[in-house]
Image 1 (cartoon, one colour):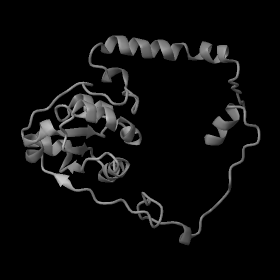
Image 2: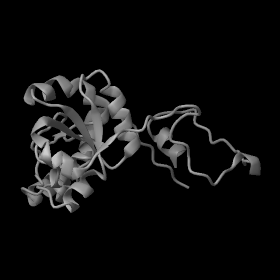
Image 3: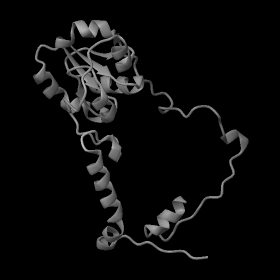
Image 4: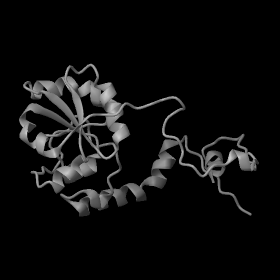
Length: 199
């Protein structure tokens, strides 16, 4: 299928490698997340109750998807994409000048550790919210909703038409208009070439 689409995109020299791996080349183990020898440092944690007591002196950065951030996050938390978090730290510190720590929140501990490494020069201790947002919510702490503090725009995940809470019908109509206009859009582009293969 990939070869077919490459041909459709105008690539003329496309081949499929015939390779039958031997038993020694196959494994049922999980794919390694990092190259051999690479280690992610463990990140210290802060309990939800402790964060609740010191929330006014913390910069909370939510590294979950913008969709899940919108549906609920620690009050005052910033939404940021892990790859950009370091470039936003100055603005975050300016918004909370009395901050004593940066608290990272998200479902992937390795991602939080990578973000902490990127924030090593932030001048504040960096910790993870123990148990993530789920532990915060389950502990009965206040929850904020909406795109309230966006360090990055909500372009990290695709929002399906029904993910828009304000006007689902308008979002679905916009999607259908885009879909119906695809063929004329391809024709206007001029660079896209599609071939019809017949048997």
